[in-house]
Length: 302
Image (cartoon, rainbow, N blue to C red; front, top):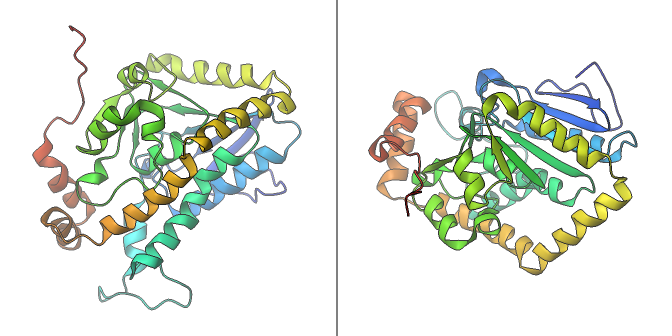
C-alpha cells in the first residue's frame, strides 16, 4: 500500500492496497508465511474489502497473494501458540476463547468466516487471481469470490480434512456439484488449475506467465461497467444461490467443522501429538505422507 489511509484501511502490515483503472488491487503480503491467514491478515483484509466497496473510484476488486502462493491456508502456528501458555497449558482468557467447547468453536468460526462472507455480500465484483498453492483456508477465501482465474499449475485443495476438520466455508458443491465435492473433500487431494477449470471449480486457467495480465485485464473489463449495473447482476446471481440454500449450508458447515474438532480418532490425535513434539512441519508431513502424490489426474482418454 502506498501509505494510504482511508475510511476503513489504516496502514495495514499484512497486505497491499492500490487502485488501477477503477480496480482495487488487494494483495495479501505475507510471502514468508505463504500468505497464511493470521488473525491480523484477516482483519486487515476485512477493512480493505470494505474500503474498496465504499470508494467511488473503484468498480471492481482483484484479490491476489504476494510471493510463491495465493494462500497456503490458515496460520496454524499463530493460532496454536495463542491458545497455550509458556508451560504448554491452556491460557486463561479475559474474552471468549475460540476453543474449549462446541459452542465456543462455532462462535469463533462464525466471527472469522464473516470476513470471506463479506466478499459475497459486498456490492462490487471480486476477482480472485490464484497462483501457487490455494489450500485449506485459502479455498475458503477464493471460492467466495465472484470470478476465479488461476495459473494452470496452481493447486487447489483442502488437505486439512485428513486430520484437522472440514471446510468452515462450503462453496464446493455450488461450484462443482456433489460428486467432485466429495472426491476432493473425502481425500484431501489437490487439483491443478487447468483441471479445476475443466470441472467448474474456477472460471479459467492460463499459463503461469500469463496469469497476472489475464486476471487484471478481466478485473478491468468488469470495472468498465457502472457499479449500479454490475452490482445488480452480482446480487441476482447471489439471490439464486441463496434460494439453493447457500447461506444455510455455510452455517451448517461451521457447525460440522466444530463437531469434527471434537473427534478423537487416531489421525486427529496423532496430529496434535506430532505438533507438540516435533512442530507443525512434522505433523503435516506425518498427516500427508500416507497419501503419497496427492495431485488428482483427470482421465482425458475416455
